[in-house]
Each structure stands twice: as structure tokens, then as C-alpha cells.
Image 1: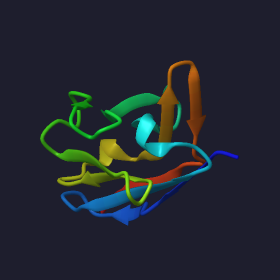
Image 2: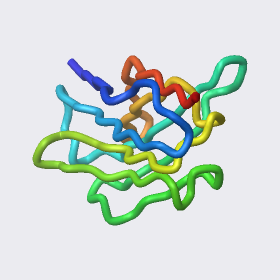
Image 3: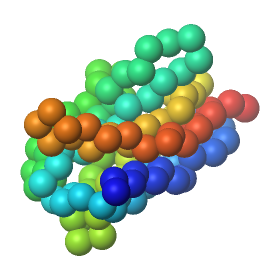
Length: 116
């Protein structure tokens, strides 16, 4: 059974940092493209960052380029999202997503709130 469990969310002041983690189990993690999405209240879910199965290739939404870094450790079946210089508009529930062809799985999400 596929499980994606996010952690690391919380309340942080503007300009601060957080590192999200997503622990995966129940599938061949190293074969999957991994993504981080977020959804703010009243808005659609949006892709924040993605990383190829090997970790060689990454891509980011324009709104987070230069501030967020996605990485993965295939030995630990974990994907990370390092978030620096956080802004109030980064406030959202952040979701981990695993994709392989037509197969896609979601975590339950972790809340990130950026506020003074």
C-alpha cells in the first residue's frame, strides 16, 4: 500500500526557513517522479517543484525559484523541500506527490503558515 507522509510544516515568520520532508513507502520510490504541490485557501492546487527519479533534473514554479530547493534521497525513500526567504504568500497546505506514468499518489499534506 502506497504511503506518503509529509512533515516539517509549521508557523514561521516572513524571511524564515522550513524544510519539508515526505517519507514514502509501498512502491519503488526511485522509479517515481516526485513533486511538491501547495494549495492556499480559496485557490487551486499548484505545482511548486518537481524532481526526476534520479534527482538529476529539477523544476520550479516561478514564484519560488531561487528560494526553494527540492531534493531526494532514494536510499531513504524521502523527498525534501527546503524553503528559504519565506513570504506570507507561501502560506498553504503543502502536498507530496509521486508520479509514474498514469499512476499518481498523494500525501495528506502539511500546513505552512508564514506570518509575523
